[in-house]
Image (cartoon, rainbow, N blue to C red; front, top):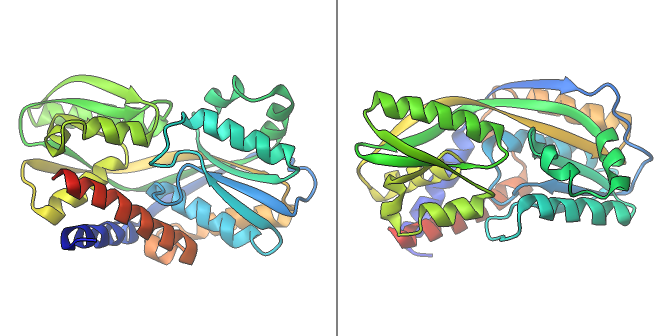
Length: 295
């Protein structure tokens, strides 16, 4: 790893660690029925190596609460290097886990189940619906950016309520700054967004502006390498996730929710355990190394 790669990777880890969870709101599904106890649990998350800030309290709480009684197999359904559509990959992971007789712990954005219903085998739909434990809203301080001048298109993730809200907010900010928004492009996953936003090298980030977590990575890159021409804008964001638990005991599920709530007000560095931190370090290293090569 070169000096620039290392410096930017450390800046990424520091940024993630300092980000504070401002609020947590939990709506419990009173009809949750997890089925019988399963000794093996598949934990399905978008990305463990580069999780969204709002997902870390949920992922860490699950790991802290069910690891004692279960063997946990962790799978990513939206890895940065993947090319498969995330809904298709998640469906395959759900079906293979249930077919193996394993339990499930699934964390998905609140709009995402719409994309699952048409893909899941009918016999698994009811199991998944019964396993919905809660909707978790996580509020944190997010950073987006705009170029200092010119025209932009906004790049967002499809089937993401948080992305849709950020698009409208960034449009408003762009208008205040006198920047014209020529359109909005919705892409399926973070890998597609990364490729699109950097398709002509680093210069493309000034024209195609993401509203996903890639925006904060670009901000870190700009600070790290002294890139000019970007204006950072701060937005208090609330993201909503659905939490499914299948094959766990009532006390374990209750402990997951209590742990999530206790993380309100804490920075990520006080939340993540050794596994999550090590994966974030790996993700920061890979992401920043790739972006530095474009600069």
